[in-house]
Length: 159
Image (cartoon, rainbow, N blue to C red; front, top):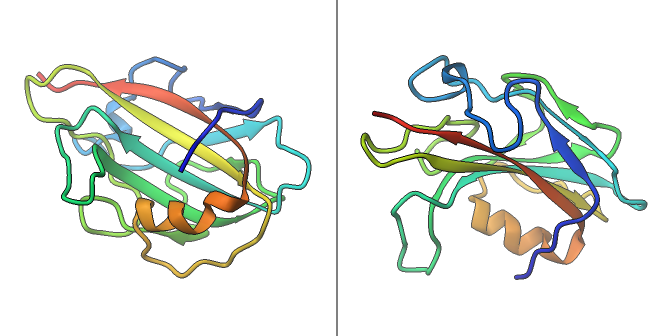
């Protein structure tokens, strides 16, 4: 499965690219997803998927996957170019906390700053995927339909 960035842009009023994610959006705060917006949507886009993944988490599975998944959201119509803070619409996949929906940053204490990649994936099809897919299951199903993608990266650290 290969990925290449496209000209899409992903932004949030909560933090800038490379900036610190506010406590409000973490497991130590209100644990609500940040507002996200995207532009530069590729022609032919029929739906979107959103992921938040922490590749700095020291976890590797027996399947060869790595990091920690904080959010999987999909079946987002092509007419949507933003998500409100704490969004509950669309279809939630399973995060690595073992529940559907968003679970904010909560790296181990004294582990340094972790980087959280908020990916927006533009798809050429409206797949109507079932709820509860893991990030890896969703990616297996949508990979042939990805026509554009980009990310917003935020950081968070616990003392």
